[in-house]
Image (cartoon, rainbow, N blue to C red; front, side, top):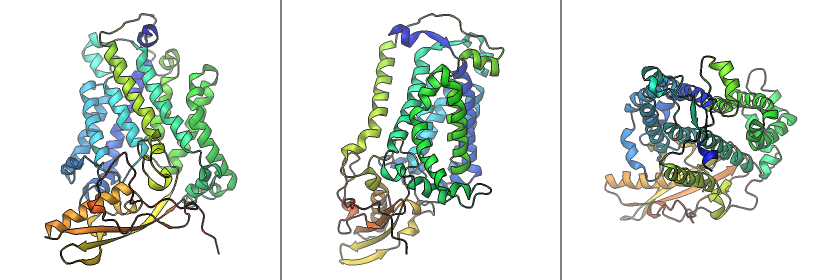
Length: 445
């Protein structure tokens, strides 16, 4: 075990990944300002739908977030350069975690992966070569790292891809109808828009997605298939970048290849002046037990969290319970309509409530389909009305359709959501059971 985990191996892949990762997280921060993401998501809305229990993060919302993201971007540049690396990486990790927990209207799996990688990278010796830290302090220079560093990174990537593959094993993905739906929104793309509507393209996308996610890590681990796996990875992720425009995620995924290629190959192509580690020394640290315990618990959670939806009542595609933090990437399209009624408890008067005045434009697209956001909206409405001196009950009538299917009632309109308690690991009984035909497609006239 000691030899397997603590043998010193070359760190060329790690230091190169640090530089690429730093560039990408800096681009994420500055790009969020440039594209208007910060404005739409964190400045304009009167409040954000934070992860439940993190309401205190609301105090960061507003114009302050522009400065917040600039500072975060600067820390990303420092990570890229390897300057004050440990401090910069921890600072970015804290700030990005706050951004992630602050809002759910722009949920994206790569935001979650970024958060995990930031925290992992914060505790890795990624600045011991090809960094300003090593240049300023030559004593820091070291061409080696313990093998567990590489194993942790590969295992994290493997978990992500494996769960992404397994999650696609449901009817609407297997019959390529979900791929067709995804491509329908790309009809207007120059040059390739018509091609993307072809039936064979939909089937190719559906099954390439399943097998790529399932097999890419094994392909990259085996020397004989590594180059093939890398070529496939580059094509796959560039396709996703062009078609789905999902930010830095495709490029971060391509950069994962640095964990798999040999140090000799990486040194020859990228760092010809770097010293290679040629020793076989095994250095067991005093904190061995704590290290194994921490990563053991961490990966137990990483493996367990994506499985939790099996312990909820009903289908996760319908209820959304257990959907987040589970690598369920681009699996379904969900849309809905929401009507809110309030009842003044003192007067007994029931009236329709204009909840859209409380929301930003981006928030309105998700409020009708996600139960936790509906519950938070109910709490918000109750608080707003309480400030006016009214004690109200809040009732919601939601209609939902999945993958452009038939609309079905989603919530029990007779339950006061403002009086309900949110239980993160328990099914919310005010969500109506999924109809047997909830994914049935409407009949075309």
